[in-house]
Length: 602
Image (cartoon, rainbow, N blue to C red; front, side):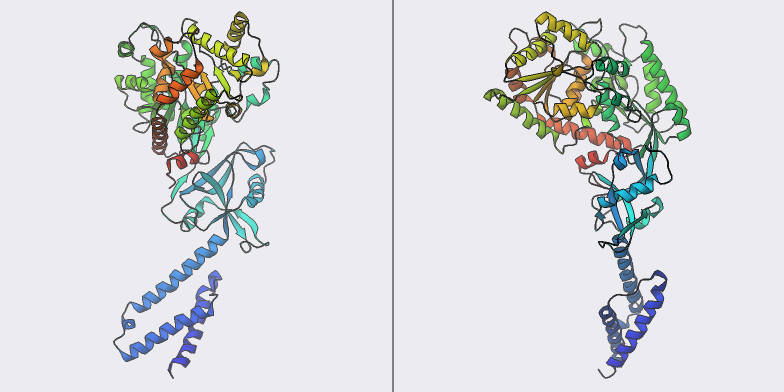
């Protein structure tokens, strides 16, 4: 021990001095003298044991181990210090910075299941927004980039560097982290995070979010309906296009919807959302000119860009008469050559299962044409609602409607969407009469409430004509239409039950979490209802409904008792997973909230 104390003091001085010299470049000095003393005491002890022989300290690996321990301690200290100077600032991708940035993207995104020791700080959003808008004179920016973002369980934020001490009043915003710093930041996170890079997308069929013509239409105006129809003759299109847009991670994707921008943007991928473009004419007749023109146009674009390409929501438009056997009729159907060429152009540039079609019949006809990439997923609006278990939510809502009916609750409210115009300029008259009766009964009995939601240009004049015939007063407050999907969903969140024939009117109800019943009067609607396992009444059961004996309460009870909402949820999750696989096959990411629904956060 006589030798130990002097040696210990000498080692402390030498060891501490070495570390000052070693770390001066990084300004990282050891903060704890006791730690130095302990380390030095160990080295002294090792020296004494070496003099005595037979010590494990005499192993040749001991000096290297000591250096390694010091390096690990330094690295750990550096990581702690780095984590104290970084925060994650939550920021929306749409209408960021109080609506002054229409679309915000991240050059790199780290996707992980946990943010570890990093903290989220919304207080830094102001300085971050000022940095993003610095030097740009526009009051409203169409687009801005953040260098590095973190995505955790459906939430995304920008990584920001601070100066000053974490948690102190002196802590201030320094700058947003750059994409090149992803590797350094990556080391702070546990598990196996993924890093994805921003992509430029040429898109078609997405809502006109950036021009926002709908903002100029106030549904309360006397001429609002005419203005809405001049803008979009079928407001149901807003629902499926909103669903398609909401599929893709907006932080990762810069969207170019204007064709004049496509060539300049040099897109990494092409994403097209469309509807019933696969038109099958009666007999061997020609395609309608608008369908043929659009099909040829998409065919040309896919081949010219020659980048990974995705078709979303495409479906069959075919007429099957009531007197035809459906299986025999389907067997006789086949796609037009123009349609086959367009599908081939996309299939050859898509992932193996890279064309999302509306149902099993469309998928069958794809295979019949030699195209194996078609997958039946229903409508993209199937993914709008982000509940972790939408099937359970809807089952509860159906049970609640049954309970209210049985109790004659005064607050029951329904929304009705009308039959679509079929080929031959005709409607399903039986169903139309039933829906008019449903509205009338709910209107007459004051304990109930009912609204009608208009979608197509022909809805309003047809409904006015039928109301006059039935002696029903037209009340503007009960006749609704919507030019924005969010407003549509908000209205249906106040409704107990949605019934009608329009697939997108029904899907707006599903997206709102309301009990919704679809009455498919055409093959296209039936195919989608089956693909998404929606509560429905179709075929012979639908044709057997008569206006004279129709009882909505009994129909609701019957459907609620027989529908398998667990199968609905399995179908929904399988669709979300397939969309995710399609997008990853193109180096794209599904929306963070949908990834969180799947529980796949890293």
